[in-house]
Structure formats: structure tokens, C-alpha cells
Length: 306
Image (cartoon, rainbow, N blue to C red):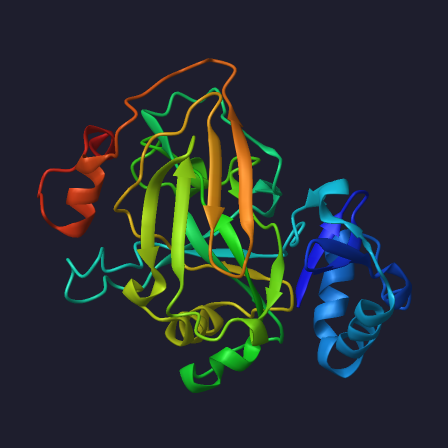
């Protein structure tokens, strides 16, 4: 099932190239905000809302998807936990790095068709990072790895936009700017993703393919990721985990760029980039970062040494 928010944050279900308004099926959900609505639907999905949505899908014609404005399907998650350096870089690393993560601001989230606004902070470079996003379905505290997959509600495309080199040790400066978390276009329920550890992730900049990797290269797999995160902080319905990125293929983003990201079955996320300072960087792939992260070079890019 593909869930979306559209227009003035109505909840919808995508079937083929149309979207069905689910508003009549969720009137009993406490919904002061769109995220509250989503959290309530997730919490009661199996018991109540799946059947209601399936019935509406059969009986309602819906409207063309092209006629609505899609919003982020996860409008403002209570937590975004983003895995750090969590890929083997196409097998260049024989063992995963020590498990690590950071919190990314919920205010960073935007949807397909929106714009990444680059801040005036004088970062040496800004990068895209295409990632698989996991949306939690059931509360998880100290969950064992063999129980973890049962706590997943669904999956989304997620781009972790990154400002590099603003501080030697601060993820906050690099990751949590407003608009630095494009997400969507759909939230796809877990039953539609046969194997989340075998998904192709691709990202294009102005039509040029940059990132092209598979989640099979993930260092700490999804069950271990949820086990570890839930040992530190309780995960709640609607929370988002960004699984990290393979750094091969990263390149700069700059004013006027069009970013597109796609994971099969999860739709195509498209956002633009705006920089009022009109800064520019080389267009090629950042080989210095790719080689340093993969261990092919011991010399970090200059911005890492700042």
C-alpha cells in the first residue's frame, strides 16, 4: 500500500496513477497535525485502518495523481535517527565501521516538488546522500535483532543533504538545516517490499546518474540497526530511520540543480536546489571523499581537516 499526503495534507492512497482520499476513513484519529494523523494510522493500521483503506481503494475512483500536490508522506517525524558511515563502499571495507548515528532535525523534512534551500553558512561544499528510510510501526525498546523487522511499518526514499566542513565534530551543523531532508513521494508499507536488503538506490543530478548502489552493501543490516538504536532510545510509530549512504558517487549540489532519487517500488522523489549566494563547485564526482571513506586513500579531503 502506498500512502501519501497531498494538497492541504489530506491522507491518500495511491493506486496506479490515481490517488484516493482517505479522509473519511480516519475521522476517528486524533489529528491536530498531519504527523499526528499518520502516527495514529500507523498505530492502528493492522487492527483498523488497513481494511478501511482497502475498501475505499475498491470503491472510490480517486483523482489523477498528476492533478494533486504531493507533500512529504512523513511530514514531521518525532525523531529522525540517521546512520553514519554504514556502508561497505561496494565491498572496499571488509568489516563495517563501529556502529554510529546522529539525530537529524524533523524540521529538515520536505516533500517531492519542494526546494532544498542552501544556507548562507560558508561550507566548503554541499553534498547529496541518497538513503533508504525506515518508518517505525510499533514501539521498540531494547528490541532483539530477530524481532526488529516486525517493528517496521514501511519504507521511503530519503535524501540526507549535507553541509560539509562547518565544524570538525558537529553533525548538527552539517545535517539539520531546514529543507535538508527530502522524503517521499510515497510511504510504502512493509508488505510490499520483499527484501529491503536487496534494493537498488539511485540518485540523479540534472539527469546525470551519480549514486547507484544496493542496500546489500549495508554494513550494519536493518535488524542490527534497529536493535542498537532501540537500546539507546525508544522508537515510536512514525519515527524515521535513515539507513546511511554509500559514498561512492557523491557530488556537489548547487543553485538550480534538480535532484531525483528512486528506489524500485517507492516512487521517484524530485526536488530542486536554491542557493541565493549562487555558489558553485566542480560538477564531477567527489573522488577525494569516495577514496577516503573506502580506505583507498589515507588523505582526507581538505574540508575534513577544517
